[in-house]
Length: 375
Image (cartoon, rainbow, N blue to C red; front, side):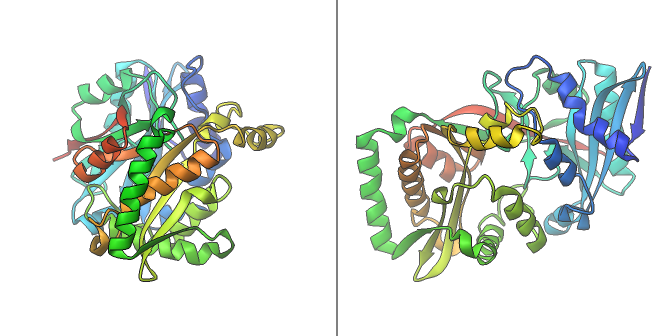
């Protein structure tokens, strides 16, 4: 018999966090997250997301053994921004057993419905500003940094329960043969020079010595550039500071850039080294030797993820994204990266898709956000 219980103490919270190590045992594509980071992100006292959101965590137990988990999420900032009543589920993990998955999903649905919400979407961990989407295609390799991974059977578990597709998110791969192609680079360089001259665009790298002011500029661009995108939720100032603090140890400053027009911030791009290549060897722990593995492994990372590329509405359609790609590829080549992933890209974001494909990138993984009406 399967029982569901709410996480209400630290012991159960750790069971919730550690469950994937059991479920993914033997799966060489799974990347263990840092336990420290997961605990911090789920801690209401530390993560500013909780100032406008509620997360209820649940465990599934069968014959005295933990066999599944799920989170039910109410994000007031999402509902205020979109003027809807949507709840979310996330952190979903389950043994390959329909009874277990059904009870978990039913628990999350009932939880958000009892909070007065009439729709549920997911998976998001815990929002679209974080890791999100269920992997539905591209199971033959590990995910890159801050992207999700799951067994194939999760697809049927979620769809059989009555969820349907809300939106697909694409991950594009750019191989070394493209970014090191002299003809491609010469063409991109020529195009970027024309764009810069035509619109008086300049680019510069992030100033890590002035990080807090730089984060304020990023906040301004981000909350303007994405406001019309599907699923977008503005980040608060505290959330931006929290994110900056979390990422500063893994940032390559050569891959974080601003575009400015007449000295004013117009766009921003962030690419991160694929730290999953390091995390895979650390098994979730920084101590006692994980920190040394991280420092040693950092130098061997050969892939980057283009995670954010946004331009304020008034500067869009000026080709700034092409300038960003050129600078990212040039700096990436200089720093020894041999390939890149652009993710995630909304399935109906034609501008981003066309730009990625012109660069020679192709879709190699697909992630899906599901939805279910609760009325």
